[in-house]
Image (cartoon, rainbow, N blue to C red):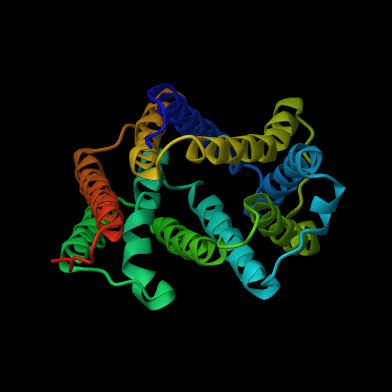
Length: 302
């Protein structure tokens, strides 16, 4: 039975709110990167997010939640390392790369997940979805324009962020069976916080301005709250309906980039982003079709 329309509407609203929060967070990071290193800022984000998760999840799950029990601890640590690498790459890039451009590249997520779902998860990807993957990569090349235009070379870090984020998502899908989502999210945050706490002193600059201190504190709290909204949203409606609204990130990034930094994406960035979004939407559509077929007699994908 399908969820009531009001629940799906609420789920969509929660996803859009989460995307807006992440967009605001990225603006803060771009501003702070003028004076602070990426390690310090990622550490601030992880530490705040960990505090948020402990405060929110412990009353819901009880003190035993803090034991963070998992059947596959090594794989969970690897998953956390993928998320940490993705965050570091994005924070490295955002100082030089416009918000909308970075947002467009990170939208490669569904494309990369599809491309690697075969070797990582053993899933079969048919020619239609492979075509969408190729279109998505073409879109990325249109945005990056290697050897042309004035695209900063640091954009390669956003590509690295998209790749490691995709592996994080693939491991999430592979490990999610029988695991508590809150525990998985907290373990990933513990991994990042622990690793960065060992090295943050090498990149530390004490903040003195109250506004900068407030922004640094908000990094983790905003991140934790946005992820929490995602968790609620995907529990209230089908992913095939909700997921496309993640692409509103491009709109928020373009708007905030123009208002705060005076930069508006050029034509080629919009063209490349359009190709990536189109390929991602088609991949989502095909996965929804195949999921419906899975409940019927097997039909070979063409």
